Length: 359
Image (cartoon, rainbow, N blue to C red; front, side):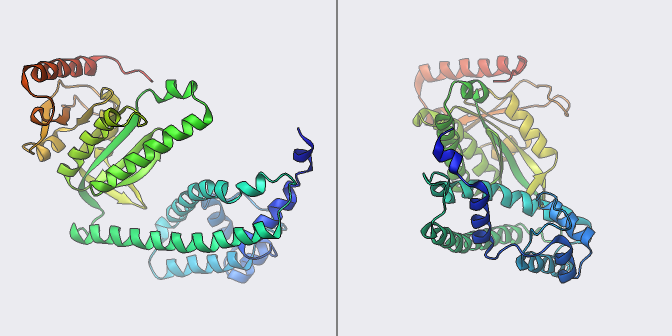
């Protein structure tokens, strides 16, 4: 360890950063927050845990007036009926989980200059910059949040699904082929660049086809598209991207169509499970869909859908998957193209019967 590292006063930095980000010094204990908010200490502690924060002793000075205001605001939302009592904990947990991921990413950018300081001290200039980043970042986050609210509200109204959370749509997964093996031989910088390129391109393509990213799960992205034809074209373009962009990894895609249950920003239902299972049996560089999505997209100019051999997947009886690709007239034409397609189809069928292995 160098002298600079030894002189780095973590406690001092944490204190300054905490006060700057919270906008107020820590001045209240858990019991004082409960008294000022008018809520039982046990209820406050339960909500604190649901947000993903660590336990705090009763006599620890770890809170500010903003904590009191937040608790009061949450209680007001519940009284207004915006949050139903039975879903209160799930709502709070979802909010905490969402912002925890955002904060983890943002703080690395905001605090890089502080943590890389040779003196290990936080200058007044850095504190001022951090405060300005927080102010501007809050404005941007509020804007993005409101814009997404508009998008979600618009989809809800257009789908005439005000009275139910279940709605027909396409659920899909796209994952990186050979990620586990590939990551072992890559540096941290190379792996970060690969994942960043993957997430950036996939997100852009999903947005272009009027879909949305539900969540990222390691090397896999879970998405939803309302229009089945848009979803089909998305699947084709995702699997073709590697051919046009050598910096984009080879991927496989699985999609299914049917009723999806939207709850607290996540999506549930057998359709989601089906899409996940189809992804696991798809060959590298291929898109596989279920019968319902194939039926919805069949006859679309430029697309080729082919019924494949039935396959056993976990949690379902024998499933009838369909391969999805660009139609031959949009690919290489002539006898050579036809022969290539026959061999591709045969290889897909054989691969579906082989045991799947982790890559």
